[in-house]
Image 1 (cartoon, rainbow, N blue to C red):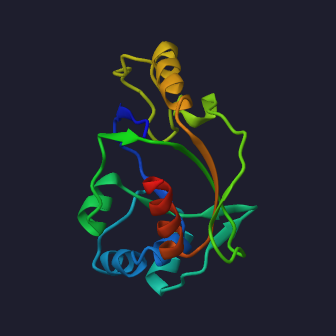
Image 2 (cartoon, rainbow, N blue to C red):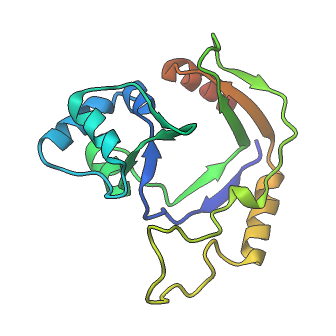
Length: 180
């Protein structure tokens, strides 16, 4: 099997995780207990999400077609959920997933999608402006570096996926794909 070894920089900003995904991963109660004990999530989190977590409401919150999500610090993935932050790994394929809550089973789908500039973090976030101008390289790295990374990744097999809300079924499909 073809692999590409990658080194990555864990991003220091919060990750947005929906209430439904927190519940599906078994993390909802952990987050709620931590908040009830006085700990906090990222300060940019919408107060309605915090209120829903404190009140035990697990249904996704929406505003204008956009889901309001919990904003989890990277260190909280490690300390709260026991998930380490990767700094390198081997890539065997590119996956382009979509979630279909109504689907019975996850499945592979046809895709003609290729990598684009949208697949690379190439702009600063409003939450972390470079007010002291300490960033030496352009946000998202140099064009030449992104082009080299894209060329390596583009050579890997591409798979479209339709995933469901079943973590176990999704994991089985991904495991079978990895072993293929």
